[in-house]
Length: 331
Image (cartoon, rainbow, N blue to C red; front, side, top):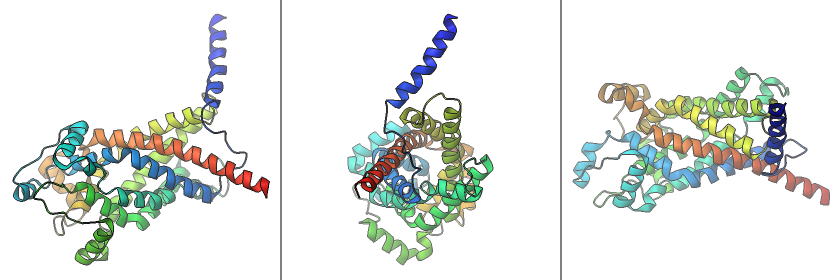
């Protein structure tokens, strides 16, 4: 009897605490325009906070690839050890600003990239279900692949420039690869052709199809499960928990493709024949563990990025819908 009372109290307590956190859900579903803008803005907020982790991940992923060139230019070889070790080494050798190298391209990427792959996900999902709110896993995966692939096709140049800035070591004696973001776009187009701006599109489409499916579908499923079982209400704690689980699943599944994508996009012309050649070279020279280089910063970055992005996304959608309803009432 006592146990059932405790269980009942716990069940009634959880929804009350959940309702106390964050903005209330809107009476009307968010419009595609609200979802599109909210997704891009939320992704930019997440990038601003987690960008140093992303830079550390890139440095660890390309480690072992350009040692000879680095020694020839600077006379020294820098070895990175772990996430905190990489961040500390970068601050000591290149200054704290190096952690945010490529931020402008990163924000450009998120505003165009996340707006499509995340902001249009629900609209594409409804398109495939013909307006039915109950979508199966297959439909969700198909919607994730569609928006992920479309986003890469349009925003790939921003990703190429971002990776190049993050991979560059700003050591004394080392010549800057690019002086600014715009100059990077122009230089790549001039030296490598327009195709250079879309370098690594295939591995990036593959990666983002995997990331989008594991990230959005996992978030969708975890959130739906929590709400169906009435463990929490549709509010901030539920969004936090769903995003945390989605971040871990995404990192485990997408890490190998992410490493290949980073190596290939950062490579000099002719270094690799293709993305598959890049993957094969890594396997032969560095072994299978090379595909999980930078896993810890990847998880720290993707896990924290997912939490910040999804929580911000859900709150921004509600804030925008509340503002829209207020404006409609006053007019």
